[in-house]
Picture 1 (cartoon, rainbow, N blue to C red):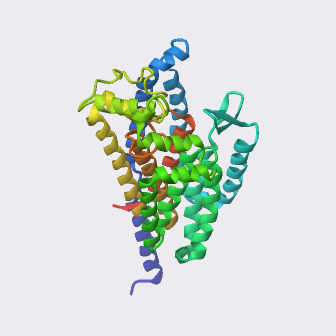
Picture 2 (picture 1 turned 180 degrees about the vertical axis):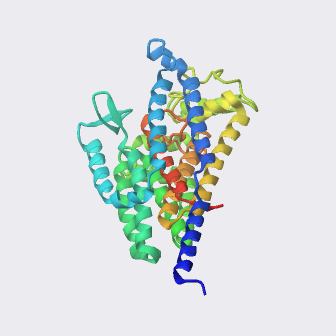
Picture 3 (picture 1 turned 30 degrees about the vertical axis):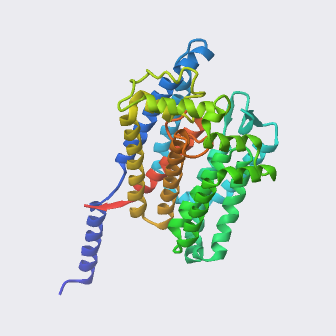
Length: 395
């Protein structure tokens, strides 16, 4: 008979062979999509802002692109570094992160450190440095909810579990909404998507979607009622009125909406050509920001717009692949949260630009100008790639 220690040696040899055969996965397809969108965003920022930048910044047509490019470069480096880290450590720091986020939001809302732009205090900073803490809130909500879903397990299906989640998400969304309605909506949307995936009962979420549809249908009278109650501001009611009838408010809030629609309509099938937009020359205000999709449509046409949407859809598909193959529930929920964030923001931005919903000031991920936005988006992408890097493949 074979000695016992011989069997042990065979077992150890098989284990070593199995480890050799196993290989860590890294989603290079997603990485390519991220890099492509970031570079494409820089090109479109230059194209859409060159006229305004040359006028406002002493002939420097590349002003906005250079600033965005510097932040994007830092973000790409951070993304690669984070992608090689173990994502499980996020679960250990989310409570500390919640405290930090609350401090930052209170500072930006109620202290002189909060910087005001276009009547809204969204930036926190000193001297030449500033950033939007609300972008950090999105990441915190994703990490915190993923940790809570793992911790509560099956209890997340019960009312007590859902209540705890609401007590985390809703107060953060409310303080963000004070100066940034669109980001507050996205934060609630992220929580909605993650809870929809994590829980078994679907009917409460279906009811919420139905209620949102009814609010959209009856937005006019609801907006007037909320304004009379002091819940909505006059400018917010104005956005609803503009959405319902932009031509009637063409010299007020409807100007940007109409010019954006003119840009989309004039692009045709293949567009006027990169850099050939007419609407960016002062007709579409801040064309490099929320309305950049209209310039894409004008310059690259329906073909360019659909191609961009397909790339975002491919990105969502890769998120789904990573989430379904993640090593554990925590990693899967992290990816679901990021997927929900990107999907919601893309859908809402395109809906705003096409006047499908009222203007809420939502940027197009990776494409619109905004240093804080692109930096934290790339951090989120690093988190997703770190989950993909923990997936083991058998040869």
